[in-house]
Length: 425
Image (cartoon, rainbow, N blue to C red; front, side, top):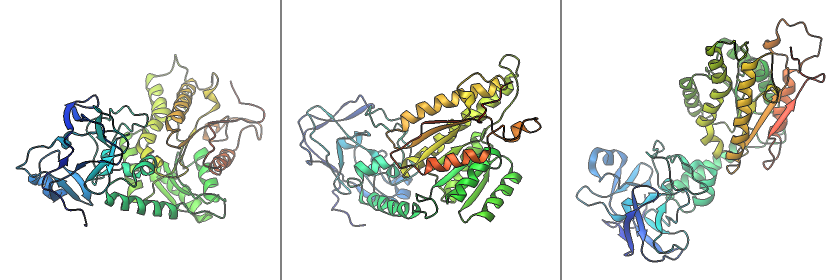
């Protein structure tokens, strides 16, 4: 580690003082204007490893990361310095010049609170800020973690003004992303890592087959391990792409958390989610069992909400990321053959519309793909004319087409029905 000479205590501009903060508790303010680029604080203290600091060798709440697994902190015989009261902001007015020197990011007015983005020095990837961010900036991330250096927006604004060890991390990360997102001659576009729920049969299986044929790597997720392994082996035998599988009940949040851990362990960090898992339980809204309505909403709607929450950080850090929600034409009209299902799909469509708006600034595309009647197990045993329903591979081809679009294009909603229309009883 090669860092500038570290003073035993932090140096701060004489005009800095502690006051009550609208962000959180108390904060650091300047009584005089500060020019862009002016040195405001030079951190001081003693160099400690994570283990040494957490063993009590440094003063609590004074630690900042200066290298991998290394903190700079005040010694236990010192008092907390003014700069240790500085709050986080997702749009800060200070950033780093080197490991220990904070400079003004822009001109700062007198009586303005001084802030940094904590992510510029966080060396511990397990760190999560105790309270949600309250900086109220337009780009506020709310949840601040030790993995925020992976976010595209953070990299674009801070990669040249964070701790040098994080610069190295970001540089290596971008090199790996460039290698992973190599171009495929088979589809003329990026090879994507696609996580598909409900991927062992029906529409999910057809989507997986079409994506594999197009050269994309896939992770199949389904509740039945036996069916899942069979489908995965079929696709592996017919393609050269990476095919992983993981048995998971998407309606169980603990199973979803285990899925997330599996992705980390296998380094399969998806840049596309195709959320196709769902159930169909018969019954009207009045005469159905409450348990059936709860289960339908949990699997067909809430599980998707939880899955996106768990994987959104990976999507934000990957190029050309997309979330494709497999809905239904039941989300656009009354659905007398399955009212519970219809209500869940209406909820999912509302979620998709709002999610699209929220993730617009992160350049994560959100698509609500709504098939009409499709030839899956749902229609098993029904006496229907040949070709009366969509083929599952029709939906797979549409998903492949969505992934082939340029990065500046997004299909927000897409409806596809049988040529003779939907079947309603």
